[in-house]
Length: 201
Image (spheres, rainbow, N blue to C red):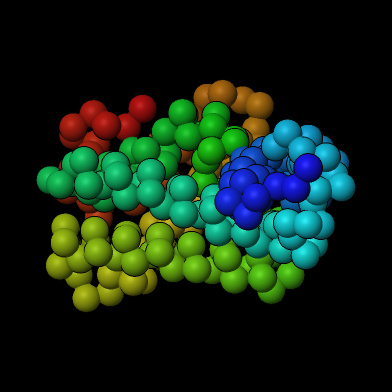
């Protein structure tokens, strides 16, 4: 039975959504096409009707993952207009985010993997990272009125991503939390006082 164009596009979007989550959990090379398609409820044979290659899917899934993570951080900032940067830091460096492998930040989950991928995947990450930096830069400029908001945004993002990677890489729960808290303390200087509001967990 032929699938309508609308249904075919819905199926394709479902595969991208599932892949964006499974890649974050297992890595680009940690899951094959068969398991990806089964995770979306389809057979492997349907893959090449929807995508040119696994790299094509990886690039689209990366864009979807970056957009999803950006929207969550942006929503947290919008919900806390008095301290948007503090809200972003608190959400990003929370133990909840640390445990959220499927839906967390793709830069922390896949950054080292992305470095070994092709230009299309890297372009997806670069576009998403630029959005992160723009959002953080606006928050810094609003809170501090600093001239070097872009450089500070890069420092904040680098610190947060590094802390999340390290906190996930160790078995010691205390050390894991210390990475998150040390990073939060380091970057909170650009915030309007999230630490005093008790937002950090």
